[in-house]
Length: 96
Image 1 (cartoon, rainbow, N blue to C red):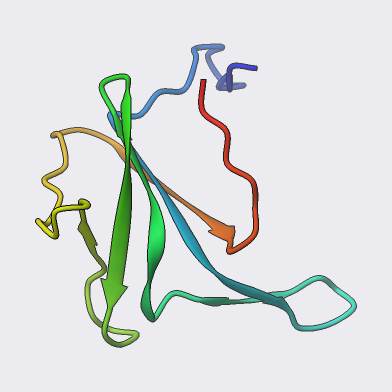
Image 2: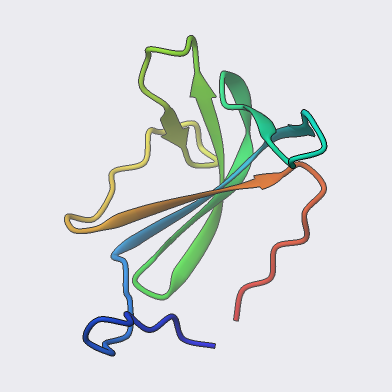
């Protein structure tokens, strides 16, 4: 289902989407989460109607996250808006 902006009723879009798998742990009864975004993992890069499997790496909390294709080359994002969606390690990801 399209995501619609409530203020002007336009459909939201992004030029790049990264789906990043990370460890997620519920901390308390309020549902607060601890999300492990340091280290490395897998995910997907989606742009211009195509998707590819990727890996990611972030050495420490204050450092940049790097995304790599299956050949080990750093991904160059298309200019424009980028969305990063973090999902749990076992979350099912479906693309149409």
